[in-house]
Each structure stands twice: as structure tokens, then as C-alpha cells.
Image 1 (tube, rainbow, N blue to C red):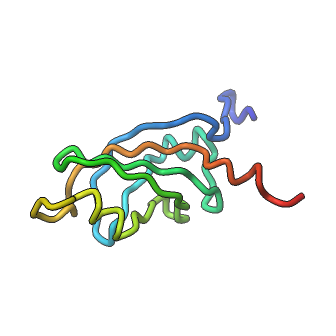
Image 2 (cartoon, helix red, strand yellow):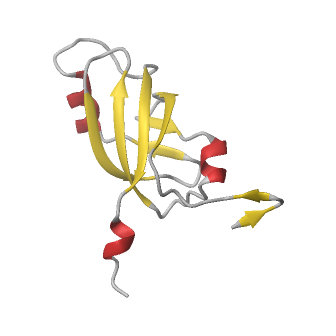
Length: 108
């Protein structure tokens, strides 16, 4: 789809960005990515989070809120932190978003 001379494509590939874990286990998806890939709040995404301060990588299915934030499940954060002490809030995370393939499974 072309809007104002710029093509906007739906999210069909993986997108990687870095974000700070905010209060309430949330990360902000950059506005440019939301706009470029026409990301909608009802779109189910496969999310992979990797901590740059702690070792570990976890994957889960999630939806973006209307304000552009993703909530990371508490269990995912506990698994990401592992046995290491410390809080994850304020840590930098590398986030990978991919289409989940859920749209292919929706009944007609």
C-alpha cells in the first residue's frame, strides 16, 4: 500500500530492535516500525527477547497494545534472568518481532 509516496508493508519478515524494559514488564515498539509495517494491536506476533545484561533468550506469542507497547509475561522474564540476581526493569533488551502465522489458521 502506498501512502504519501511511501510504501507501507505489513509485517512479513522479522524485525529486530533494542528497547528498555519499562515498569510493568513492557517494551515500547518504535513508532517508525509500527508505521512502516502497519502493525495493528490485534495482530498476533512471535516475540523473542534477549537480555544484553543477563544471559538467555526467550520466545512467546504476544499482542501489541494500542499505545505501541508489548507486555512480556512474568514467567518469560524469570526464565530470561535465570539464577542471576538483580532486576530486569531498566535493562536493555534485544527484541525480535515476527509474524506468528496465526492469520493463516483463522477460519474463513
